[in-house]
Length: 223
Image 1 (cartoon, one colour):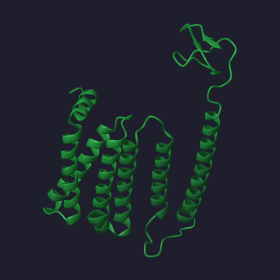
Image 2 (tube, helix red, strand yellow; image 1 turned 180 degrees about the horizontal axis):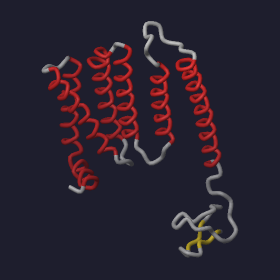
Image 3 (cartoon, helix red, strand yellow; image 1 turned 135 degrees about the vertical axis):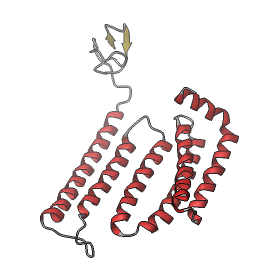
Image 4 (tube, helix red, strand yellow; image 1 turned 60 degrees about the horizontal axis):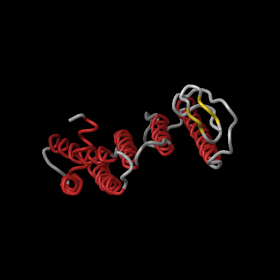
């Protein structure tokens, strides 16, 4: 068993550093308690490196075709499509990184990935001439689905700080709808449904998780 000379504690297994002070441990190591954990991480690391290499290959080829060889999309002679592709590849990488990053709840991952994806969608739509379709249909429908998904995840998962993400998701359903109304002085059916779903789920949170919400707000925002 290894021993930390600074923390005065014995550490089982065969770690290289003390988990408390990160100092080098003394003594002989033991058989690993979880021998398959490192192997699983190696497989994940290999998968990540392979997909990252593929992403870079696609990006380099796209930039070469677009910026060097002047290959354009039909009907868009002035559009640098490789930059839009690069933006989407970054979103994909962000989603994969969130997938492997520990310490984050499912609700937080869903919220972050969906919001970034929608922002990229709106940017793409403005260049490819389907902005109205994205704004009036795709964005509110996806936001509504995200709000419902985050609500379910926050109700089920009790081991992560999902309540903050839940409240954020509900706010995301209300604020964009109100912003749309202020900009256009009207609400489409999809935006109206998104707003109503957000309000209904907010009422549900208050009824079923009122004390948890209050505790979470006090802890996270020092209210």
